[in-house]
Amino acid sequence: MSSKNVTEHTPVEPSRRDILYIATGAAATVAAGGMVWPLISQMNPDASTLALASTEVDLSSVAVGQIVTVKWRGKPVFVRHRTPEEIKTSEDTPLAELPDPQPDSARVQKPEWLVVIGVCTHLGCIPTGKAGEYDGWFCPCHGSTYDVSGRIRSGPAPSNLEVPPYAFVSDKKIKIG
Image (cartoon, rainbow, N blue to C red; front, side, top):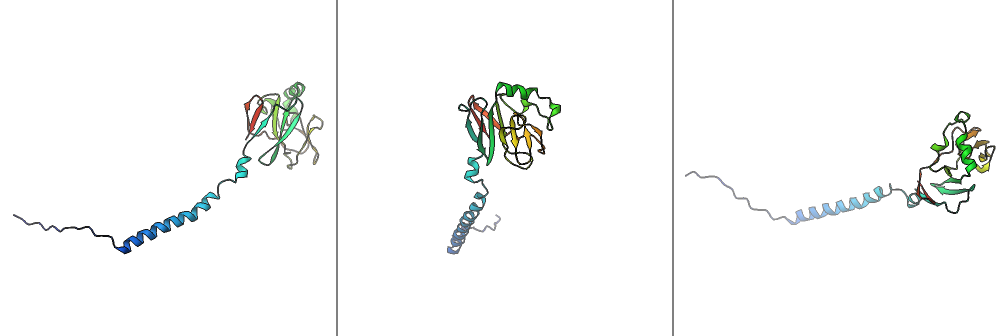
């Protein structure tokens, strides 16, 4: 018979030093996580910013021909309940007359409701409603005139009033943002 050289391996009990190393490493990991968490958490948007991300507007109290102003993301948003005459005028305007041609149908989801950001596209002033040559909006700072569809008609503004993202959540309520 041949003899094999077999060594027995007995498990080594961890020493007190090994346990201290493991406990120190675990405590350091927890402490590092506790320091990194606030740094990562501060990158999230502020609660006030999240609250302004969208806003709902009740349209039931807006009379035909009336303009209401609501605040969304720190900007004024004009919601206009247009009359049948205003709708017809907006739809019949020849696009060749417009500095920034855009059909009325591309600016509204329902013809009777126009929703635009109330900031002049020239220098960021706030135009006044139901003013100007086209009974839309007029920016008194530099003389830009917008029609009842929020399209630029005259003045130094380069483009139409911006249409924010919005959706009808019911027949009488919209959600902006």
